[in-house]
Structure formats: structure tokens, C-alpha cells
Amino acid sequence: MSGLIDGLRDPLGAVLHLLTGVLSHFIGTAGGDLNSALSRYLFSTVDPSAFPPRAFTANAAVAHLNGGLVIAADVLVGAVVLFTSLRSMFEHTLRARYALKYALPRVMVAVAMAHASLFLTQMAIDLNNALGGVALSLGGPLSVDSMPWSGALSPVAVSAMQASQDLFHAIFALALVVALVILVLSYVVRTALLEILIVLAPLAALCTVLPDTRGYARHWLRLFLVTVFMQALQLIILRVATAGGLGDAGGITGSLYGLATLWILLKVPGTLHTATQFESRAHMAARQVERSVQRALAPAHRAAHRAT
Image (cartoon, rainbow, N blue to C red):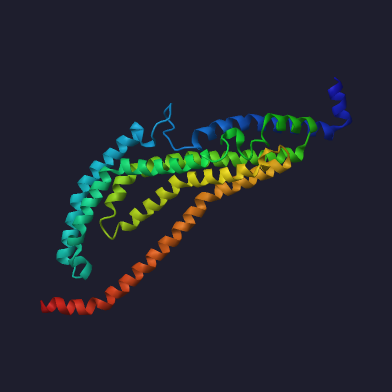
């Protein structure tokens, strides 16, 4: 009854007390759930469907689908050889004339890579885990309880926020929870994308044979490398951010430092993708130069072809 009377006397204070209480409860509950999800995905790339952890490619469904596309790639090899042979017979260009000669070694390498795709992709994942392990081993132990944002979301900080009815701090802590949700979502998407890329690896290997499809293989490789090694780079950033020590504070400073760290982490995939675009543009420029040279030499080649 006294609480109702106090609420009627100070309605703004009652609303503030209710709002900070709801936000504090939400932040405390969400922090525990997000820490559990991060401990599953953040520190290493393993099969999330198995416990204890095992190799990512040990997932039976992924391995089965990869094996099915290996068989499909073996069947498509015949179509690739037939297409290359017909091109060398009916297309009167320098590239077509020697297409079969240069395609056969590529076919053999592509078949080998398709059959070893599960092993090769796991090697890349193991390298990422090794780099991440180096980052984890430097300095003190790195866990979900020692993250730059852990102090701002700790039970002590949440209780202090609720007791002091600090709505300003609660809003920043809520933004921190939203950023953590985005980080967890990015790792769930990363896991699903890795599974898709591993399944498609045999077809990507086959795409390296023909110049017409080689661009798809390069796109697969760039996407795979960014998806795998973003984790190692993020762990290095977390190690540096944790060494700073600003995240130990539970006030506004800790929340802002945690938000800044999460912003940098979420920028990593885009930054890596931008870096790969420079390589793609350089390759396109080289291709344009190659085509210009071929067009310049085409009349001489046609004259030599008529003479023979």
C-alpha cells in the first residue's frame, strides 16, 4: 500500500524505478544466455552439434553431402572434357586451340582437390584454431567472464544499476546486449555458411578447370578464407582489448569500452572482404590486359593458321 502511495506522490520516480528494474532484469538474464552461446562459438571452430567438441568436418551430415557432390563432380568431369574438346575443334582462337592441352592437367588437379576437399577445408579450420589458440594463450586466461564487456554486465554492476535507478547506464548496457546478440548471430551465420561452403567445395574445385568458371572458384575461395579466419583475427583483437583493462570497470566507461570492442569485432568480416576486393580488381585488370594482347595478336594468329 505504501508503494502505491509513493507512486502516486512521485509518478515519474515510480516509472523510473519500474523501467530500471525491468531493464536490469533483462540485461542480467540476457548476459548469462549470451555468455553461454559465445563460449560455444567464439573461441574455436568445432562441430557445434557434438559434445565433447570434435572436428568441424566430422559432422556426418556435412561429410555425406560433401561426398555426394564429389560424385557429382566426377560425373561432370566428362562434360568439362567434352566441352573443352568441342571448343578446340570448332572455335578458331589461340585459347581454344590449346584449351584441351592446358585443361587436362587442371582436370587432374581439380579431381584430386574435390576428393580431398573435406581434408583440405579442415586443415584451414585447424590453422585458424591454432592461430586463435596462440591468441588465447598469450597473457592471462581469456574466457567469457574476462571479456571487455563482462564487467558492465556482471551481477554486481546490474545490481548497482538497479539500486541506483541509473537509467542512463541501463540504456548503454542494453545497447551492449544488442551488440552481443549481433555478434552471436554473426557466429551462427558463420557456422551455417562454413557448412555450405564445405559441401560446395568439390564443385568449386571443378570450377578451376575452365576459364569461364574460374571466377566462381575464386569467389568461393575468398568467401571461405574470410569466413574461416575472421575468428582468429577477432580473438587477437579481444586479447589486445582485454590487456587494456578498461573493461574491468562496471560503470559507463566499461559499457562504452565493451561497445567499442564489439564494434571493432563486427567490422572484421567486412574489412577482410574489402581487402579481398582489391585482389579481385587487380586480377580483373590483369585479365583485361591479357585480352587486349590476345586481340592485338589475333590477326597474326589467323594468318599463321591459314598458312598452315
